[in-house]
Length: 206
Ligand SMILES: N[C@@H](CCC(=O)N[C@@H](CS)C(=O)NCC(=O)O)C(=O)O
Image 1 (cartoon, rainbow, N blue to C red):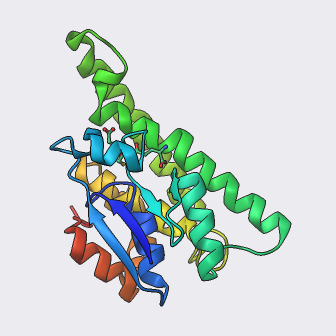
Image 2 (image 1 turned 45 degrees about the vertical axis):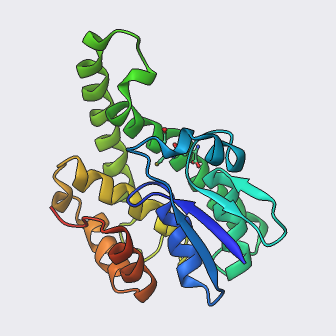
């Protein structure tokens, strides 16, 4: 049985939703990031990067990074396009979310990674929040006229859903993003998403 290492409300939520969407049994282990559990020797043996998500497979091998875990789960559970161009489009969004949108938010939550000078933190956080908000507006535009980013529901959608909840957490005016808010409501109609939101106690509205 696969085991997901995750933290409530973190970017591991997309993999959590994908697993919950499947009919397969899986195990899950909470890693308390606020208490630094990701840096314990025990967890670093699982994921030497000291981050969630990590997915231990049935054969004991561990996959790390959303860019690997989400396509893997998507292909396993029919939540991934199966034509070459569709797959390239999916990878394009997963890459963009992981390498651009998520790091913008990282500036808000972890300014110490970007400067040794605490006096610089407010400026880093402010710039990160502005960039992050700009990316959320872009995602809002992506969902105009569509239920799901790639046409059919795929692992890319739970990934986009996470950033909506982070916008709520940062008190950004998320209701102004009409397409994104409607997408969030569609996500919340899915029983798998409801179970994960309940388990992770995620705030989805301002
Ligand atoms: N590139 C990684 C980033 C993972 C990541 O930064 N996860 C955050 C939670 S959203 C984390 O584990 N943070 C703990 C820390 O920074 O110490 C991925 O996309 O999987």
